[in-house]
Amino acid sequence: MDGLPDIPGLAITGELGSGGFGVVYRARQVRIDRDVAVKLDNRVLNAQAERDKFLREARAAARLSGHPHVVSVYDAGVTTDGRPYIVMELCSGGSLADLLAREGPLPVERVVDIGLRLADALGQAHAAGVLHRDIKPANVLIDGFGAVKLADFGLAAILDAQEATITLGALSPSYAAPEAFAWSAPTPAADVYSLAATLYTIATGRNPRDIPWPATSLDQLATALRGEIQPIKGAPPNVNAALIRALAAESSARTPSAGLFADELRGAAPVPVVKPRRWLWPAAAVVLAVLAAVTVFLLLTHKPVVTQDAAPPTEPASASSTTEPAVPPPPRLKPCDVGYCMAASACFQGTVVIGGKPASAGSARCEVPHYWEAFAGGWLPDDAMDLQQSDIVRLPEVTKVCTADVMRTRTHPGATTDGWSISVLPSRAGTNGRPYFYCIGSGKGGQHSGASFTTG
Image (cartoon, rainbow, N blue to C red):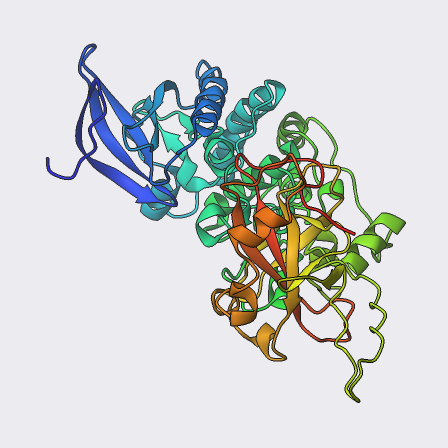
């Protein structure tokens, strides 16, 4: 058939579905005459290091294939044009999303049975050091014998490791743990949240929380992410208690492991009662709030959100020979030959763009792993924060400074930033509302540690 990919050893016969970043095809392994499913990603892995990482993680996911409730991985590779693919077991029964669409909400007893089987698979994966990162009804498949199986194990981690920005296509908002919106590192507790959200959905026909995505504002998103979970009508008390705890918005209050979630779901372990309380901010959280990451603390406590380190106001420069005073530099910046140079290092976790609005990012110490580092910056027009992020990056104040040439001149001697991605991080923090921006760079292969750009 025209338009179908060419993968050695496979006769691809048609498309099974698409979504996110890839397409799933039905195929036949020619040599052993076996029907399979092939997931082909749309993104391209150009660097050999990226391809090696993909294959390494695919091997880790394949080691889970012996579990009866994990979709088996048969093969993996990269096409001649650089797109990664995984050859998997073909599950002819569709997904839990398909089942829900056909039959409506499932009986609670059946949901619990499904949950126990998937929790066992998830626990085995976590014990092997593999996270799923994208559990949802569409990623739980049903084989020809009616067994439920987790699909795409580790695929989100394999393919999203190269992404340093949360985008609409990289997140399943109704099933992602709240901390995922703040670019927190994935954890077993986040997988438990996604599994509980999946079970809640197939038991009720609705999501546990209605998450607007893209959100029109951070306030709207924060309110949705901390929304109260309504018990499932007619479900045993221990089932409701187990699901509600696993869906806790704050990760520290959530069921920490898949095994414990299974015990609570079946009633073999009591569910701790968490008394309602006002959130008391530890010192570290206060610092994060002031420094302005779009962190889970901000999402849960509805604090005002800022997008950048709240640096102390810079002292105004001395008056020039004219009557008009010189313009002081933005926080952490100093006058330079082109725009402003960094006067102090500034590093960040992944950027977040909600509804196209100006990007925000979580601050990080440069000595710990991070995605982005600032190398230059400048002032923005007064109305810039009302613009879309895509318009901000095209402003002349930005385009003359946030360039590969400028980044290269600000790189530490002996270091290289060739091929780094460049983005723009707008902010008002520390300037009484006046907008400014940082030019930020991100190296190949994801996170790195240490400062790459000159300061002082």
